[in-house]
Length: 493
Image (cartoon, rainbow, N blue to C red; front, top):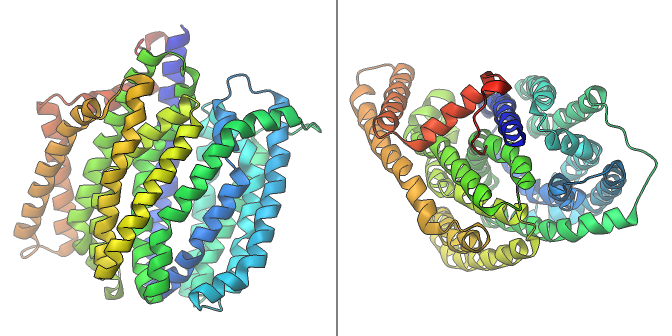
């Protein structure tokens, strides 16, 4: 019965988390495209320049406590209250550091406007610190339905405000408005809907326990943020703001799509996987399902997006954004390995090996620096090709500890994903061929629609013909969501 309840709750969590991310990311895509019609790559470039510092401030506020609290089996009300006050203090500290550092950030990029932008956008860190424990509490209960009710309206309202401001000439401040309004509305709504409230208790023992695990994730997170944004830093320093804006715009589209497809599964399954962290055979079986379901969604999304990038940009955006097309295509290729990274790193978190997580991050970032040092001399294209190489190289150390901890080596992982990759490549070729035949004779919008229809149908049919296990898994999740608990299966997750 416990196994059935876990499967039912996980399936429901995946369903609502997918809806929440689909709604939020769908709105984000629409708003981003609308803003791109009014704003220039330079406007997006300004936001990109401060994104790394904003991300570091958010990571300092989180400090790894989110994963530590979700993972803790016997979390108490004192643990929650301790983390609430800790994150508030860290939130104000992070904003203070951003405020003081604003002139230095502006000087680094030789862009005076970044001083005020940094100090305004930085307020979001304080806002996020108020929602931290609320989100953790809902996530531990796999209650993504409530988060769906909160995030989607906030995305709509902030998006409408941003587009209206952009249409009236507020330029980069329309992007800032969206960044500030959305988390503010989410925070207020969470406190209104969720009943959790902090007590006037703070435990240094609880803090020490959670920080022991979370601190290593925090250091790993800081490394990941700095090096994930290192390309933005290098491009922002060496190239014009318009180039940074095109690169940032392409990465934003990638992040939106990946967040919707991969994030919904990873985020919803992490609490459930943490609950069976001591059962290695069951954990391995669950991770196999997670990785197969994730790549089944991510592979076609990335390769189809790369194939359709130019006609989509031509159809939806102004010509000034066309230089971003090759950036997006190369980033789509690099993103194919993303699900493998996430799954293997999640194994370390679930097993409580945040020390190995940190060591891996240090090793991989050394690889990043070396690749950037070599590739930067070949310009922006060289940097992006280097990003693909880095993503491939990083998979080797990422997968090493999955072999040791749960007996899921890279060889088995590749066996699980290669059938999906093969049919995705085949279907992408069909989609490109259809475009070459249709674009000269059809309206561009109708041609793109038919290409998507052909490519998607061919993909689903191919998966059906070869009896792809990932397709069955996702179908089972949907059936699990709509079936009664009495009819639930007994398989893990």
